[in-house]
Length: 368
Ligand SMILES: Nc1nc2c(ncn2[C@@H]2O[C@H](COP(=O)(O)OP(=O)(O)OP(=O)(O)O)[C@@H](O)[C@H]2O)c(=O)[nH]1
Ligand SMILES: [Zn+2]
Image (cartoon, rainbow, N blue to C red; front, side, top):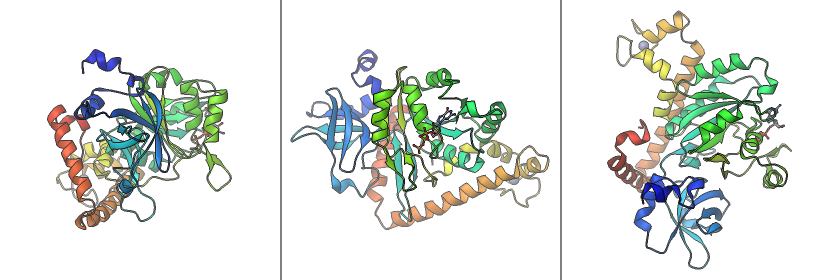
């Protein structure tokens, strides 16, 4: 498809791009229709297509494999035999994953095909550095660019100071300070979202839904509809339970996610390294290339801690996240040996090869 045809594609406001175009090309002429999943229910999902929004079923036999469960942001290939159904999902370009709940050794995909992961942090509460570092690691790990959105600026007299702190906790990530109530910072944020797919993550109460409403200009009836699809989280508080994909008035697509009480790392080793680029940079100056920064002589990381350039807490957080990731990787490897993930891994590798061939190995950032 030519660039012009792509730009006038009916799904363009929902993020139709060169990637979707290429990934769908093999299916063209098979009587199927492409669509982007905007919301997922138990046995069906809402998909926007060139024919408008449709409800499509998906096969329950795919439920065991997280990579085959439709997720908000996925591009789907739809059949229209007896009602709409998802034939398959196009390979994900990027994804925001976290470890599944409990003892599961699967990752859970929160949003697919995202360029930018916005981590919402409320300025009305004390900033929890380790939590921000964790979200940022997951964003890098899934191939998205992280950005920090400091919300409720109207409640924070010390916003500039907190902005500086967020910058040092998330090197390489842009930091926005916004208030959905006064609209401060919203134009700058909207400009960054134009033309890309973003996902908004953060703990419950961080102000995500309010921000989404402000960015989409959703008020009154539409916002009410959003409240109606909300459930209660068992503590009597209303909380977002669905993940919605919404086109933004200024272009770009935003995925809202439910408040997460915590996120476990998933396949995030490379993500942690990027999230702690400051430490990695220091480590390049250590005498030993395999320095563990504990007792080794001429350790540049420990030297930075000693003279106050690097906080002890940050170094500890880095270690903790790497340990957690290694633990999860060991668990996943055990499953892989059992053969259960073999098929999934193969598909994944095949997709990477296709993408590498097409765009070169740089297209997905540095990954494991
Ligand atoms: N003062 C002020 N309050 C805000 C702002 N944005 C959100 N709030 C309030 O913060 C509370 C939580 O906001 P929500 O938008 O529901 O937070 P959420 O992150 O979507 O929460 P979950 O749906 O549980 O994930 C609500 O009482 C909002 O009115 C803001 O910019 N300024
Ligand atoms: Zn060292």
